[in-house]
Length: 468
Image (cartoon, rainbow, N blue to C red; front, side, top):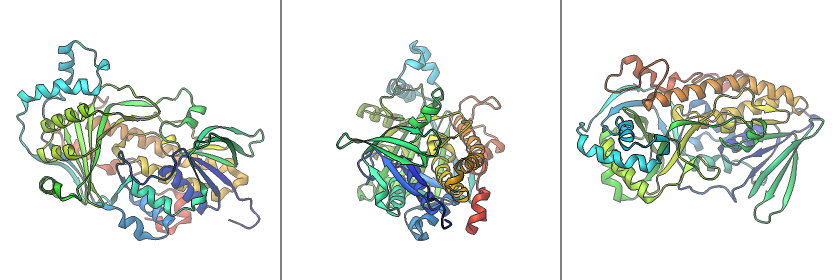
């Protein structure tokens, strides 16, 4: 930052990966940063922690923030291959509506475990598929890396000054001054109940897909239910008791440790890849009516009975080796999959949305974390370029760069989810891996994501390593 220029101050609401990325990018831009997070401290582990994939640009950005390139490399595994498989699956998903009709129960009234129970029984008579996988498409130039959410958070957090974090602070409200020169936040210290005020030049809403700050500006904007939920889990197989299960899994999925596997059936699909430190990350997407959620969460509470029924269904749908991994996972959980129609703007006066607060998305393009990291980097460069004196110009440029990209990526990810789940699209028949065409197989590849691998010009201008 030039001598004599005012140093800007940003208040970031949210201490997840979006908030940490913004802290890194803005500190690099010469700004002061305060991060407000309601959690009592940084996570050391999470029963619902899951895997994620980092694209090459996100990797470079993180490495530039950390200052030591080996740290990210040593904390991740390669995803050098993007492979979609057709696989063994039962008939229960294709018979789903027939079963509901037989019951005479409207589908929207059924919960997840109510829907899945009779379908398991149906399969006992129809499960005649062979235990095979076959390749639909394979891209060996996929340069992503697989990370565990907790590991990535720890890397980003440990490289930041600890004093910038206000843990255990619940965001309450904000107001922008009449002359637009600053923004004032009210937060509550959860341990004491005391209300405090924090003043900054810029408020960054990094508070996730259920962002309360976004609702302040867009009260009519709603999350859109995708039509399906996802069972998720991470199996830690460092204990030798899972040796036989992992050995069997590697025979069916021989490129584990360097491959992002998708297994597709008619009306369902699963995702599988390995994480560092002997962990397997898996996801299973299941079409179902939107469940009722309690509290401010998109994670559904599961019971032991629901988990048992999921295990029984997995044995009817997937190859035994994958079904066993699902069964051995100690704490599987359910994400209810939402996105949001693209917004027309992502900043107002001194307030800007980033990450999932700006563009809630389905997971099918591995975009959520990567969009978040790029949001932070571009925002930092715009603020560095314009300075706090021209904050409006900086936010206008940030919006002009990011909004067209994230809007297209959200819609593409939505489309990919509907294809893989065999849901109706206006321009094609429901996807069936048994009769798929080569063109339809090609459509499954991650590299078809709009702006895949593109580097924003504002990063090219200031960082030569990104000219790739």
